[in-house]
Length: 307
Image 1 (cartoon, rainbow, N blue to C red):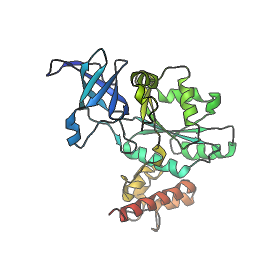
Image 2: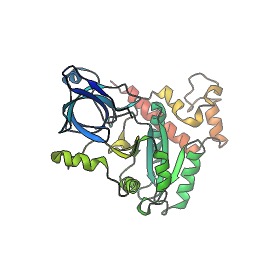
Image 3: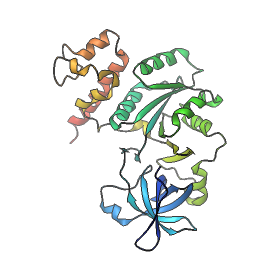
Image 4: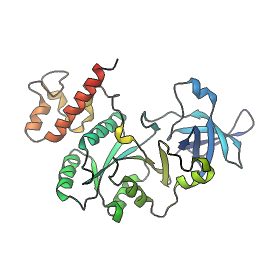
């Protein structure tokens, strides 16, 4: 979090640094020093390539201190940026699956993991509803923990595994992603317990926005620790990744790519491919390799039909 700094503005008011935690109909809610400021953005952003999004660190000019109102004057440099849903400065992505009901969507998980690697963001996998299917849990945990991903098992409705989830969230700005029905909301509610979230503060400040569905919100758990609940995240577009670069974002491929016979090997049809040999030897998961091929073909199709 940016340090709390007051700066004298040109108009005689004060500038304050903070973080955007919500956006309702172009009204931005900025957290600074445990207060929420309701802000609009300066007109100059309309003519630029950058507009404020949830997660941005910003400078705001305080217009009405008692009413906690201001104007966003500057957006600080972003560490990362996700186009859909619009979100910045995330440090960790938490992907929630369910052991059953619905069936785990591992193709979507692998797309998201590749995208997190592309953005340089840490990933954590949470398998919820572990009381429903022991076999599938073991298979998923083995595949992903073997390649270095943190896998946590939970029964959110009973708060089982919640302490371990809380531990990995500390000091992070984490976005939660999961298909409908996996128990993501139950998991987030279990994390908060009886704590008051920023949602209540925002709702009280803006009654019109109380029942408005927004793209994304940041919820504060503790100092420098936030959760972003991200509706629609599971359908995001990873077309920013080029087909020739996809190999770099499957972490188990990285050490072997250089040993393929052909430069620019796609690891699909080429002979003497080190990746394919390791799949045959059981070093690389065949299931995950097959999903790599599917993602590669999807990206290639989009590239060929881009125009």
